[in-house]
Structure formats: C-alpha cells, structure tokens
Amino acid sequence: MEELKLLGAWPSVYCYRVIWALKLKGVKYEYVEEDLSNKSDHLLQYNPVHKKVPVLVHHGKPVAETSVILEYIEEIWPQNPLLPNDPFEKALARFWTKFEEDKSPAFFAFFRGVGEEQEKATKEAKQLLKIIEDHGLGEKKFFGGNKIGLVDLAFGWLSAWLEVMEEVVGIKLMEANSFPRLEAWNKSFKEDPMIKENLPDRDEMLPYFKSLREKLIASATT
Amino acid sequence: MGEEVKLHGTWASPFSCRVIWALKLKGIPYEYIEEDLSNKSSQLLQHNPVHKKIPVLVHGGKATCESMIILEYVEEMWPQNPLLPTHPCERADARFWIKFAEEKQGPAMWTVYRTSGEEQEKAVKDTLEMLRAIEAHGLVDKKYFGGDKIGIVDIAFGQIAQWLGVIEDIVGVKLLEAHKFPRLHAWIKNFKEVPIIKENLPDRDEMMVLFKHFREMLLTSSRDS
Image (cartoon, rainbow over the protein chains, first blue to last red):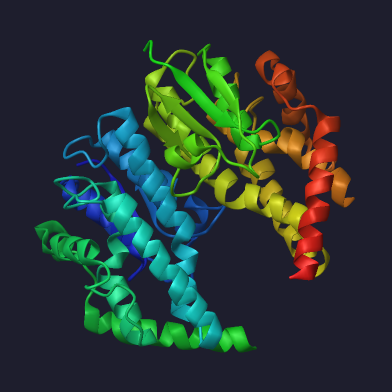
C-alpha cells in the first residue's frame, strides 16, 4: 500500500472533496483529523504558505489546495476518471470548478449576513444558482455527465452543507420549484453509494453551523 | 491540429498576454481580435456568456475561457515546448503557485490599483505578504519558476514583471524593493529578457496613460456612488 495521508478537519467540505475522490477511485489512505485552533507541526510544515487543510501527503511529499490535490489524485490514480478525456471538455470542467471557487464568497455572505446585507446576498446567491443550473448542469444528470466527476465534487456542498446552512439562516435558497434540475442532481448525488457513506452527519452539523453563524455575526458587529 | 485558432483579448491585459506568450512559445499561429470592452463583440458574448470577459481562445469553433485554464488546454493540444513539468509532484507544485497567483497575489495587487485610503493601505499590506511568500517559497535556487527555462508559473506571475511596476508608479507606492525581494528582482530581469516575452510586452508608456486614466475614472465613480 502506498503511504498516503490526508490531513483534514470535520466538517470541511474541501476535505470531503478529497475523501470522495479517493473513495471513488478505491484508493486507501490514512485520515488525520486536525484541530484548527491548535494546528499540528506537521500541518505547518506541510503547508507553510497557507497553513490550511486539506493537505495530501504521498510518500512524505505534501500537496496542498483542494483543486490541486484533486488534479494530482486524477493523475496518479487514473482509474474511474473524474475529468473528461477530451481536452476541450476538460477545460469546461476546470471552468466550472473555478467558477465555484470564485463565487463561494457570495454563499458565505449569505450564511453570515443579517438584515439588508443578507437580502442582497440571498439575491446574488440565487442568481448564481441559476447560472450553475442553466449553464453548468444543463440537462445532464451530473455535472460530469452520466457519472460523478470533479465538478460534482466541487458543487458537492450544495447537497448536505447548503441544507444545513439554509436551516440555520432560516432562508431557503435552492427551492425545488425554482431549481428543479439542481434539486434532481442533489438527489442523484446523495444516492451515489460512495457519497452516501461519506457525508457529515446532519444532526452534528446543525449545532456546529449555528454556533459558527453566531460567532461570525458577533465578530462583524465588534 | 490544422484547425483555426483565434484569441479575443485586449492589448494591456496581463491575462490576454499570458495566452499570447503561451501560443508564441509553442509556435502556434493564431488570429488576434482586439476587443473594445466598452462595446463587447457579439462573438465574445456568445463565446463567454457566463463572465463576458477576455481572454477567450476559440479553437475549431469551440471557446475556452479563463486564462490559466486556456493555458492548460493549449499545453494539452500542443505539447511541444512544454510549459508544465512531467512529474505529477512538480505539476502539483506548479498548479499550487498558479492558484496563488490567481487568488492571492493578483487580486491583492489590483486592489492597490483600484482603491485609495484605508482600503488601499490594507491592500498594500496584503500584496507585500503575498510577495514575501513567493520570494521565500516559490523561487528558491531557481532562475525561473519553471527551473532553467520559463514555464506556466512564470507566465502566471508575469503581472509582477510589468504591471506591478506600472501600478507602483501610478499610486506612488514602492512595493517590490530590490533589497527586500532579491530573488523576485532577479526573476523579473530574467523573465523580461526571454525573447518571446521581450517582444510581447505591452508598451510601458502607453500602459501608464491607460491605467492612470482608468484609475481616475474608478476613484471618481466610487466617490460619486
């Protein structure tokens, strides 16, 4: 077995993306839970620039940044490919992965906002969901086509995490009537056996995100 | 590989230049279309409906957007004079720095340009932090980020070689002091001496006029809004 470690922190969706990729490819690894309030020497040594999780350590060599880790995994373990073969389709997949990364602050603003700021953030987040549904997903079952690919992993947080965020905030963003195709995708994504077994527990996430939102609101007003 | 290659760009855009450098380094003939961003062509809007931005590479009628994604596409389609390393570990390292350029160094630098007062002071601090990280971790014992010859990371950081200097002159803040950033200073000199880069940098004086004008417009509109 190749020496492979994943440094992560529950319930980080970035860490789950790496877990999903490894599991979908049947790659064995050792998971190391990091305490982000007390980062290990290993983490600081492996990711000196950002000091963040996830970090994949393969034969002692670290790879940091989720999208970089996923491309690395794809190259080292090509079985069950998560990226299309065709260079143009690959570029499209990378476009949507970047879109998710660039636009995630808008959803974060929805999560931590209050009052007028929140209304504005909600509107913007819904506009983004429309773009994702119309241009990204289209008529496909998954963003990756007939099976899950990297873009599905990138948008994976729209499943378990968004539902919890919506409940904590008290606003439904991804209404089934407004986003029928994303709703269908959500169902298909969560039903995939590998994903189903590797989603954070909803009952554990609720108090975590509730407390997180309270902290964010408190720090914004000080 | 005989299909037509077209590039929609603007002459002063560092993102546009990235694609030009990659195409020229690989000897790929292409048709260049200068876009007027105040009056975007219907082709641009059709090829990039989500962002409506340049650069866009159109190859055999299919459009690829986002400069560094275009470069990965170009690398795959035309593997001569490779811009990415072959070993997956080194490729991961290159992609790490590309992401750093896109998400950290670039945005911080352009925020210095677009803002004033307290917001600008913060952006100056952020930019210095980013430059320090690149100096300390990115360029250790190497002539270029790509090693002995320029690669995709050099192209990603190309903004530092010319655009940063223009921003420094316009806002009147020196960010990249030679004694504090000896490696980056040496890299800028080496990078700009590469013939393809030297011949394909936008004219600095013309850039000064253009970016000075844009900054004035930006600051006026933010004051009025």
